[in-house]
Image (tube, rainbow, N blue to C red; front, top):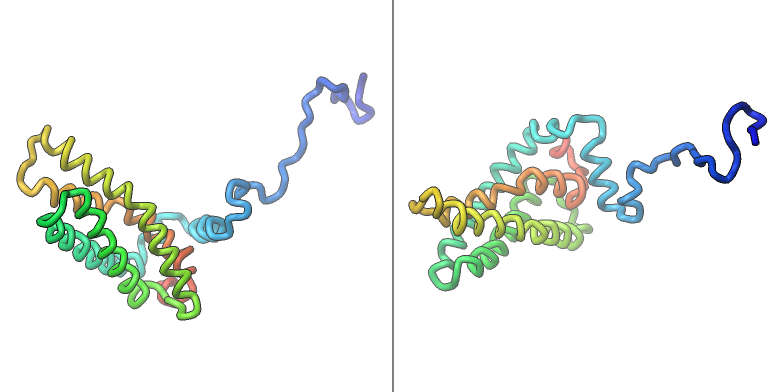
Length: 188
């Protein structure tokens, strides 16, 4: 059998090739408005690394460093009373609280009407990063550093590296999803 348009086969065994559906690049995120906005925001008109070469990212690092410092210090204090992993988790709550307050005040524009949503997103995302922080911290302090052998403040160094690990993902998520990049500060 032949096709009236030319030599293309039209029988049932011929592969059916259809043009790609429009706007299928975000198929995985259909129905997830938050993820769609994040992906579109990250890739909107700029190279991804361009988001990290801004005054806003520098301020995020400075503020995040302060929150991470409180997190780290709380872990050192709590570690006296509990085990290492329990101290990491409890101190994480201190870091999340300080991080939200400082970022809402100094880095991103917080909206009073959306505050509950912002806190929920900020907390949820940072809790999703807890396994990363725990995994990196524990792996370095318990498996890697003893083989080097690094004994001088091994847990403190491992915890600092663990806290720093998710910084780029944190910035992008909070910029485009948690706070929605609505302020003039976010364009600097």
